[in-house]
Image 1 (spheres, rainbow, N blue to C red):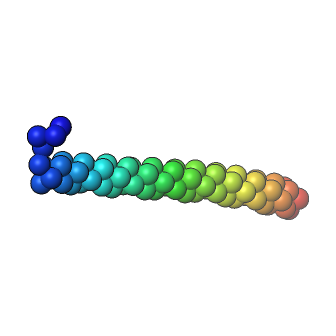
Image 2: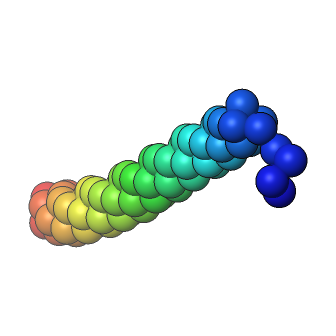
Length: 76
């Protein structure tokens, strides 16, 4: 190692720093992608549950109104 010049060592350190910065940026990108994926999944699940509950409520209201309408028509 004593035959390496200072310039060679500086070049190696610079190369390692560049590789480390690239790896850090890639990891940050992966983490933000994962966070966006989880947020999208949560939004989809919430919308699906809301849609299901709304449909069930509308069906229940329609059933009750249909019963009363049927009773009203039957009495005439």
